[in-house]
Structures are given as structure tokens and as C-alpha cells.
Image (cartoon, rainbow, N blue to C red; front, side, top):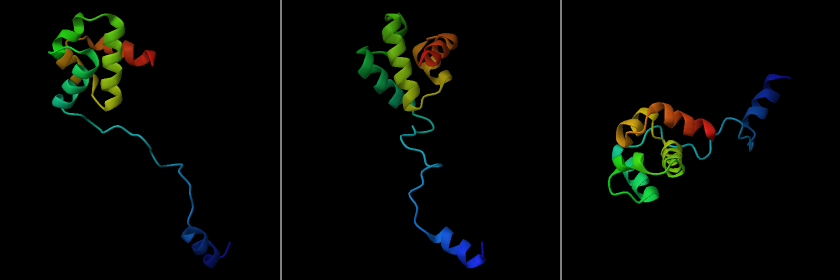
Length: 93
């Protein structure tokens, strides 16, 4: 391939998306954002009460927080749910 052909090839508009990311959550959410998400899903006034909910509800809250961009340690700190349990919920999905 000649240099002119190569330059023309690179200038062509392409619809390649091989390295593009869609629907990527933010790198990190704030504690306030995590609280709002958890309260909306669980209906609890205080996020720390989530650990007293049934496992299915805990799983739903944890998965939603992870999907939104919360870190495992952040979820542990806010909810009191153990890191092992959070990882278990994460790995189920």
C-alpha cells in the first residue's frame, strides 16, 4: 500500500466501535448518591438498615450500587454488609 493510499484510508469516516464504550458507569459515585440509590430501592430511611433486610433485597441494593459505580469497600462502609457477602452478590450476576 502506498503512502497516499494509507493516508486516504485513515481519513475515511468509519463507524467502527471496537474501542468505544457505551453505558459505562462513572468511576465512582459519592456517598450521597449511593445513599439515594439504596434508599430508593430498599425504602429504608437509613442505609445501615439494609443489612437487616432479606437477602434478596440486599442483593438487589448491592447490585444496583455496583452497577452505578460504587466500590465494594464503599458499600461495606455505608451499609454494614460484609465485603464477602457483597462479593458473593456481585459474582452471582
